[in-house]
Image (cartoon, rainbow, N blue to C red):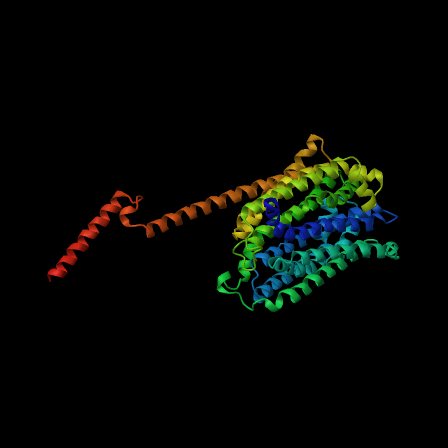
Length: 503
């Protein structure tokens, strides 16, 4: 009976995280479906996969920071006015990203970034810039969906958010299957995954938008009450968002940086194209067992006692101790999944052959990089847990240095490891792991800094309250000069009172 009651107390956490976790895994399957759309091309499949991989990873760099506006919706959007300000921010950011896409596709800037920096040949570079142009509108559409996802999560509608993302993935898979039957494979194969990506995003945006208007809009106040600090200004939103955006931009730029160094290390040869193709195929498969741990950072803000939308379940709130135990259980599950999928012979190869559609020889090249992904749950869990706590305190600014350390460690690893005989996809994934570990370490240092300041502030408040509540004669912390000064003042006050009485 006690065990059943204990498990029941974790149900709100399970119900909140499960749709998000399934969504995260489904998104990785969606990426694999998009890769299959390229891998099914009869001619130049490796070249097509490398071109799409380069364009997609660069596009994710632009859309990544916008996806963290979900956290703004989760923590800072309390009214319709706040939502309108958040949408304005995302509209401006999406438009800037679209302009940059067009510039990279049509100007010498794109030729330098893609052809020269990555040391790819003219054919791959031309296809990559064309794919990047096709993806120009995607950041704007994607950003509009994320802010509504955050608002829905704030009101505990994680199932709706999860359903929208899963519908996104299903739409991608369906459209890949449909477009593969068309003559698009002969006309423009790159459009198969790209059009599928757009249709999936449109489905997701439609679901979260309708979900907001049906579930929240009518009950959402026009302005925020003073209990939650009044209306949130654009400046406050941006101050909260930019450290998270910087971190996610660093995470998303990591893949293009890895592709760049791996390609340059192999001198832009056929082996370089093959290595980039291996990385493109292994990213979604390797990310699948641990990527959902990132969603753990939403638990603290969603179940924080100061969240006005936080509803009690069964008369008892979710405690911090329960959150910690739940997060540890998620970490253990993820680590177990990684070792089962990547270390049991034949499992990862079967996923690559059956889901993505690559041949057995290509799948064999992905085995070692995928095994390195087994160790990613450790830094990801630490980062998610501490980031969620800092988001609750609205202290996200201390997270900014972690992004610099991550990219620094990543680049150092990419430069040093080739001298140790590490090349190709193994170099890329190993360097990513080093960057993750560096970032998690810096986040832990930042959290310790904030924790010490919070403790110091709490101790100071306790002392002040004790001084205000206790009689002066009972306060032991006064220094001797202060006591002497108080006695003198009391004597002087007594003499004045005596003079008034005599007068």
